[in-house]
Image 1 (cartoon, rainbow, N blue to C red):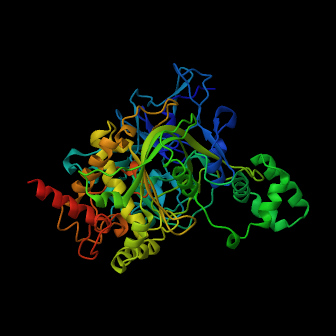
Image 2 (image 1 turned 30 degrees about the horizontal axis):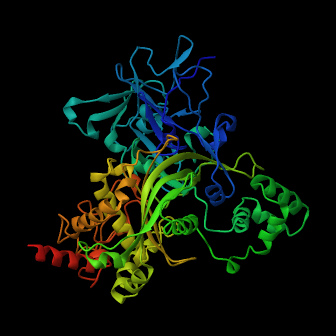
Image 3 (image 1 turned 45 degrees about the vertical axis):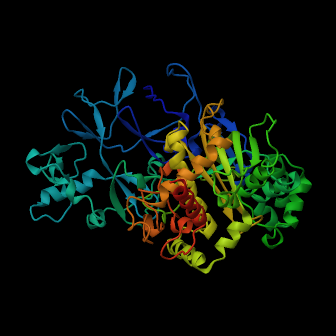
Length: 605
């Protein structure tokens, strides 16, 4: 049996952007990782994060295996499948799905000695999140051209295709052809693209994922040809949690973990039957809790009897417990030096009316997990990273990554924020985003855009842009975490800007040092001043329709947008008017700060 080809990836890439279901380019090969049913749990390291595991229904968090040194045959690894299967030779242009065996090892080469290049187009369905090769033999022998002869229409040769280019046809898709050498039929790739191009040729979605082979049923959604590297081919659903001691009693945490276990609904439904007895023991063993805790969770499982809390609620409570304690002497994975921001005669008093506390997060541990992915669009079906197969396996696994880092936390005055967001003009501005979010069907994937969230989210982006100049980290390395909600539990109004790395030693302190008293306020004021005027004003500040699906108001690349990897909400739900005021908002949350800064500047002159 021929030896498999082994490649090297960074461990972080196995979660995002190259997790299960994503196309990965490595050393000229195009590969795809299968879902978790093809992972060997013995070769993966389990990551412990109870908060995130509970959010995912009690599932296990697994990190991809690592190695050091050269890639040997016995190195623990993940199984990737070649996709697309169709490739063409850079030398002779012949297309093939076969992999050459050379000296007892698979090789990505043509028999002529040329390197095989993946075909640049694949076929995705519009709603089922399926992906497959373009059926090139069928496609090239179809079409409505008048010159399509009966012989060409009946030709079924699938091993005599070539991918050719014509220099006399320009540089676009019209210059690229797939040609059958058996019947001399050829078609330009210009006939491949288009919303209904594949449907017109009678080509349908086979309901497959590339690693599942032919074990699939036909899908009712139409196929569309897309470039292999298109970002819409893989829209990952990542869930992240900071591993902290939550501000919640341990008993309540155990109850919440039980309620989110995959088998808990079946336990409640059986209501004391034989299956319930078995599931009680199963849940207790999976989560390491007493069996009576499972019974207690069932008694209080009614949603009306308890508040609905998210991952951020516990983090918020834990951060609040650190802000009044000064220097943190703990040695855990969550160390925060918290203090009230002291007044300064050289800084407007309105700054301290809005911002009350700062936390220098000297160490934090963050765990990210891939819940699933979609293809083609955000309204497509979610494909779980672990579909729960084989039947009967109740505890799922998720690709996960453990990161260590540092950050700066800012808390805003709750009374000031509440007073501001009660204004009718502020409420009306935020409702514009609420309505659009509902129309797009994204209410369960993005944060709820109440006024305080939109304002703090925009402010976080301004801080990331400014911190990139002074922290030593690129803006793409900085992440945001917004605590802004009045919908559940304790009201929240705070921002955490952090950076994290996969190394156990974490980061080097370039960000946390900017939380010091002599650096924080100048940085904060500079961030606010930078964004008061955008290079695209007055168009930007007067706009209420920007971004994907018009889910940004007064915010663009010139003022508020940051790297996609840094934002929790895909660079959406932003608006400078809620911070600085404008045509529809008479007074922004930071409007008084700006007025006072101008007054101080004029007096200084």
